[in-house]
Each structure stands twice: as C-alpha cells, then as structure tokens.
Image (cartoon, rainbow, N blue to C red; front, side, top):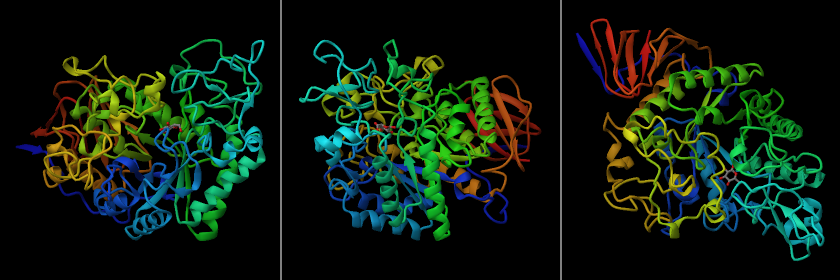
Length: 556
Ligand code: BGC
C-alpha cells in the first residue's frame, strides 16, 4: 500500500512533557525582533503592546519562551543595541508599564520571557559617557599614536567597518568594537560590574526569566590592547582568537552572573537563565561559556553556518554535542536571527531545505531558538533600496556582525539561485512580519512599516498559511506539538543510524529522523511509520522514498 504524508499523523500521547530538570535544557525559544513584529500605534515600528497582543499566536505556535530584542531607551544607532538607559523603555516601543504587562501576559499564557542585556558597550548618549570624568574611568580611552596622537592607539577594526577607535575633541581616543555611537565599557572597573548586576536585578524584579547576553565574548580585551597585524578582522571573528573577543577573562563575569541568577531564582523557586551570544572559534571554546557555573546556553553558530551537506552537518552536530556534553550542558541550536541571512535564502534560496533544516534542528537533543518569520518561510529581502537601509554596517562599509564564516551556501545553491542577502547587511532579515491581507503592511499595524515589505508576501501571511497543511506555518506548529508530546524529543540521547550517502539518519528514543540533503529522491527501507515530514514522503510496501532536500520524523 502507498502512504503519502504531507501533514502530521496523530502521535501517541506521552505522559508528562519529557522535560528534564531545567526548563531551558530543551526549550524552544522564539526571538521577537520588537520593531518588526507587530505595531500597535501605527507609526510603522513594532512595539511592546503589539507584541503583547500577538502572544496568543506564539502560544498557539507551541513555543516555550520568548526572547525580546532591546526595547530600552536608545538613539537607535544600532537597532537599540546602543542603550542610553537600561532601566527605561524607549518611547518608540512603549512604556515600562507596557513591558510589565507584556511579561505578565506571557506568564499567564505559560510563556517565559527573556530580554537582551548589552554589557560590552553603551550608547554614546548614556549619562556615563556624557560625563567626561566618569567616561574616562568607565570606558576604554587611550592616547593616540604618532607625533601628536593623531593615529589610533592600535590597528583594531570595528565589526561594522573602519577603525575601532574614534578621537574625541579632547584629543584622546575611545574604543568601539561596533559603531562610534557604541563605546566599549571598561570591565576592569568594579562600578561597571555593580551596575550590570543592578540592571539584571531590575529586570528580574519585573519578572523576566533570563537574559540573552549580547556580545558575551567581548567585555574583556587582551592586556595592553595589542595590534593584530592585518586587516579584514571582521572576517576572522569566530574563526580565530582575536585580542578583543573570546578572551579567558570574560568567564569570571559569567560566573558572577550565574551566581546572581541562581541566587535570585532559588529565592523565588524559579530558574532564570543566561544565554550567551558568543562567537568562539571552536565548539570547545564555545562550551566554556556553558560550564556548570557559567551561563545556561550559548547559541551554536557553527551549526547555523554549516553548509547543506550531510558530512558537514554530521560533523558539526557531533562536535557540538561532544563539546557541550563534556561540560554537562545541552546544545542550543539556531538557524536564523536578526544578524544573519534568513535560512531560506542562506541555504541556497530553497524553502525545501529550510523546512528540512528546521525539522532536523528540532529533532536534535537540546534547546532551539526560532527567529520571527522563519515559521512563515520568509526569505531574506534582497532588493531594499539604499535609502531605506538602517544597518550601521551599511554606512561604514563593513559586514553584519553575525555574517561571519561561510554565511551563505552559494556553492550548493540549486539552479544557481541567489543565496546571499543584500551584500551581507542586516536589514533584509528585519523586514516587518506579514500577518494578514493581500497588501503591505499585511496587518503589521495600522500604519506602514519601517522597512518596505515585498509586494508578493500576500501568500506568506499568518492568515494565509493558517489551516493549510502544506504551509510552513503548519509544519512548525505540528513539529512543536510533537516535540511537546513525544518524550523522545528534546533533551536526551541520540545515535546515528546507517544511511546512504547524502542522507543522515539518527535515532532518538522511540523515533528516527532522516534528512536527505541531496536534490533528488532517495529510496531506503522504511524505518518506521512517518510522523511528520517537511515534504511529501511515500512509503510503498516496505520502501520509503525520501524527497530531495527533506527531513522526516519516523515512529519506530
Ligand atoms: C547583536 C547585533 C548588534 C551587536 C552590537 C550583536 O550581537 O545581535 O544586532 O549589532 O551585537 O551590539
């Protein structure tokens, strides 16, 4: 008999949820990029109230928690990653009361809330930087080189392009690994430590369940701020050691924060977490951030950057699991975020691959982060006119922070499809979400949208995809529902199973996952009963036909 599966078949109900100790060990966490998620007041910019109104959508999608990108008071030189007041909400996004209401509403729905904390740098409008005396103690000022100090103190380049130093009108220079509007803090100063611990307590008191630590690998610089000796440094981030990233000294900060988080949580009977955004050169170096006395999670960017090839995927999965297991931590998988080319586009402009990659990710042991819009299969927008672009890297001639390493899979793009984003900048993955309707702004809000949405997104809206079993949205819903119901998914063991070239197969308790990375069908003995597939899989007698670029979960 021939069985064709495009939508999920009912799965056996399992007792409990399969969660191990530590909700975060296998949580699925949804990244809300606030300015592009939902706009409540019609100014074209997403806000906290808009996000709160859409929480039922996220509950229904089946995620465990929400990560909100920075909504703090900020001149917005870098999408809010330039914070002027860490305890205030920027009027663009609402008020502190809106934040409070959002956190409460999320908790009422059973969703946890993680917020960003940005400790490597502040805005140049932060009161500390505005006061020349305080600034000298709390930021990294140095005299220049050259006869009259006219040259930067060293050869470091900003991640966004150009020198990492700006000269003040007093004649000295300050360090900014990102934009000049983002001066780096001096973490040798205990007042900086004290302030960030106080900021964390402020948000914990408001009820948040954790922090995504921005540039968690950046706070400590090599003693003496030594020259690197060659250019193109942004390309080396995450590939080799640099004197400004992944220095051993950052771990003492994370240990102190873990003590704070554990102490706070223990006193209230909850677990509050830290997730590191750290670009480390190897899986082993990344695992140092999730040692038992450091942060709970660290985004696995090596997985994100892996090409769509079975050998490469297998080796990055093995290396990641081994490295995190060596410190007793789960692995934290991610395929897209607000800094990288959306994975539909990055994986060769192929929605089939993107859907398969997602099912692969959600079958692996550990936690996973989803980036808003990936559940709609949104592609990167690659034709934004220059005049609407806002990524500071675009104006400084650099590259996106996250777009390091291979980033785009141009080599294996099917039919020569364009694989990259728009010159590697980050506006194309930040275009506001389409919720409903045939025309922009597709229900994003009552006004327009701060970046133009493509004219052909009518078929990609939440409303258009809801109820269509072939849609990417329903695929995500089904996968997350199975993940909750099946004890074999989430945290726990996995082992590789034999598979033909180009195909990955691995088992989880009671389940087998196959991934066909080839562009054509592959037949193999049916390993069980299909539960969910990213593309229609057929089982004829005892033979399964795995469609090209597909992933299938099998009950075994
Ligand atoms: C954030 C970026 C930001 C940079 C500087 C990154 O890790 O994700 O969006 O530009 O940090 O704060």
